[in-house]
Length: 383
Image 1: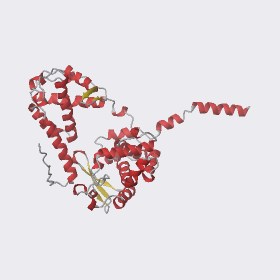
Image 2: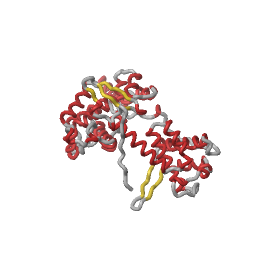
Image 3: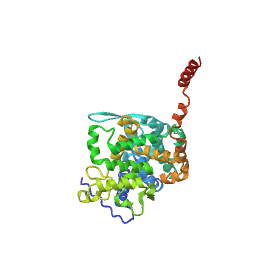
Image 4: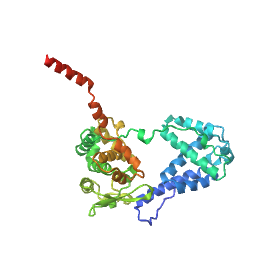
């Protein structure tokens, strides 16, 4: 089958790469919907109008997984393909069947001709899968396609509340070690140094931008050269739900971005037209992917924390680092919430509770053995 080229005619004021990314998600959703039973069309319309594009995509992937489970692991359907599952079969599904599905999803295997793959999900992922299935059953019941609402019988899944989770963020001294590594190459292996020589200004610009603004990975990935107006001291980003946001430039970010643009980034004649406006480029001259940025961040954060590359932090942890550092410097929670685009200030308050070094300071004030030895020494001196 010939794969048709997708051409996007962008008549909006959004950059082409933002519109193309939205189109990719839209296409992937449509492809998944074509694999599903036709009686779900009304549900698809509901998703399109009520949830974010990435959430819609996640729900559809979860439902495909659920329907595949029905076909391969149960006797709930006689269908061999997802789109052949009948509404009457879905109407016979009980809450207990969905609970068994959630239990199956905790750890399951997929066999191929040459390997057996084991997958394991944590409670947070299981809760999302349960939510995806719940939303479908509720909507089909509301549309009077199912005779009963079985979702009240779904087993609860214990997910730690936001306040119970440990906020993972770099401490200020670890940030300095990380920035020294990206500036001077300290802590890098010989193999990593070969790449660093060609990307150090780009890597530093990425890390400093993450640390200053607490950007989401997708927000940084989509940055363009044209996003920046150095004369006005600002740049534009696109948030969730397509919101535009103008961010002010400070001296540090201006310095590292200009250094990268002027002294390392390839000239336009060496870049393909579709990637010419992309700010952060790979060594192949293409817009960096989320995976490439994530790998870069894990490498440098692992150096900052003096741990293995596998234990390095994700870009989201740099977002947490920005939040805790800003609050630790005495900035208003409401101002930090606005910078990070938190819809609820309660999210930002979680970072306020996570004061840098507070646990370390507390235990350092409880040096029982050290105090005992000092007491013994003082006693000896008194004698």
